[in-house]
Amino acid sequence: MSLTLAHPDAATVSHNFAVAKVLCILTVAAGHYFEGSLLWIPATVALFVFGFSSGYFTAQRYRSRFSVPAFWRAKILRLVPAILLIDAVLLALFLFQDRAGIWTVESLIAALGLSGWLNWLGLPNPGPYGAGLWFFTLLLMFYLAYPVLRMLTQSDRGALAVALVGLAATTALHYTVDVGHMLWPTVFAFLLGSVAGGRRWPGAGLLHLAAYLGAALALGALNAMAGINSFNYPLILLMSVSACGVLLTLPLPRTLCAPALWFDACVLEIYFLHSYLFVRPDGLPPAAGFLMSMVIVLLVSLSVARLRARLTHGSTGHHRQQAA
Image 1: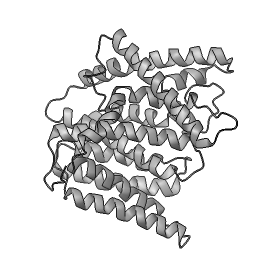
Image 2: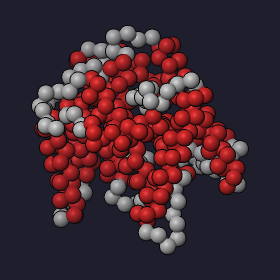
Image 3: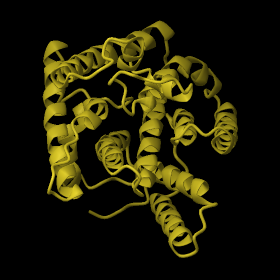
Image 4: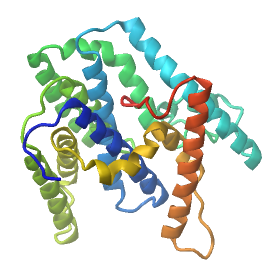
């Protein structure tokens, strides 16, 4: 398959992000399994792609016609059944493991996907729910704020202002308000995706690919060879934006990427469940434990997603969760 400088059509972009989201959630899972490793860098890029995708496809879908009640109703009907089923599965697991703190207010907050507020406010969470779910809390906040954001980005001038102000604000917050994870570039990802939705992404695909590879090489060279980490944030941000640019401008090979689409419908389940299903068998190298963990995570997540589809009379094969 030859690469072309022409921008792909909407169906190709949708396919690109469907594949990318599966690969991104596996990258995030790897970062959580090998905590403290350099995988936090690709995991940060993965979260940026997730946030950008949510903003982009939401803005694209609602660019011409929009109703606030209909928008929130659609999000509630799509997310609440999934969250309740996932919480029920986790509850069964926690009861089997005899986990402490299940019946607490913090568990209720975390089970609703709002554990990010516990993290950001420095509040303890004695319950087992909510591991690593700050991104989902941010997603819910984006949906709440989207009607205002949509109004601000309807014109090209307003969209540019949102992008520039968002970049400046999140960069400043990254350096001044440390929350222990890459919250602020992910906030910018939602904003940038909202600006990009329904608009042609500038630049040729190969240029975005070159920018991504160049930033990655510069990041590695500065840290490994020179011991310089002062440019980590701008370089990771450049990698993240360039990765989104690649997905918007270059078609991914469909045959090679087809296996990833088997799990497109259960990305939300993988995200919520993966950290609870990790295994670390004694006597096996960490890589083997990770592979075993991911087989378990994928099988359980796919099963839960199929059960959700049956309960909600949907179809996991034809309903893709572009905004989540």
